[in-house]
Image: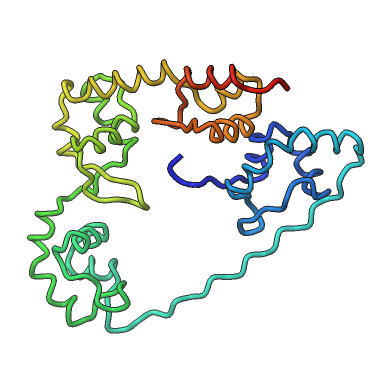
Length: 269
């Protein structure tokens, strides 16, 4: 998987094959360690220590069915500190207004070196720098364009509507990985693609990517599907699969043949 996951109580219970009440009771009795992320979530590393203990946890709960007391209320988060405004300087929104542009155009222009980067704390432009920029606003607008671009899902929807093909956001990401598409920006860490580049995609370029995705789905299983096949919880499957070097591939799916081999080598319950 691309980055470590975090589990809230509902997600952890489902992952371990428990119900919410069982997890709450186990947590209250110290059978499950408390959350290690902000006192609210369990890290993936901590969660992976639990599937092999699930049987013992259930046995302990069955031996003492006394309900757990209500959990303590969650701590109230501290208020965020307010950042004082700075006179004589421009943030991205103020600079956009000064230049007659949109804020995303200013941010993208700075990323691409079309305007100087912020010279105050890496976030704001000084008055001296900012007031020299309106004269190049037209050139910036022409270079950047008037549309910020589409994220992978909307990009897939646009291409699908134009071509009649079944295009998914994963296909768009695969096209980008192959260099067929190049992101023109990002929004909160997600790539954005220009309308012009999306409209230039031909069916000849799309068809192999779509076919490979379909073939992979036919030959693979999600973690939930694999766990159901083995009769395990998802947590037990993922921990056991990782121990055997079986990691998910594209779309977080596992090769069916490898899952079936894992079934053949597992010890009897």
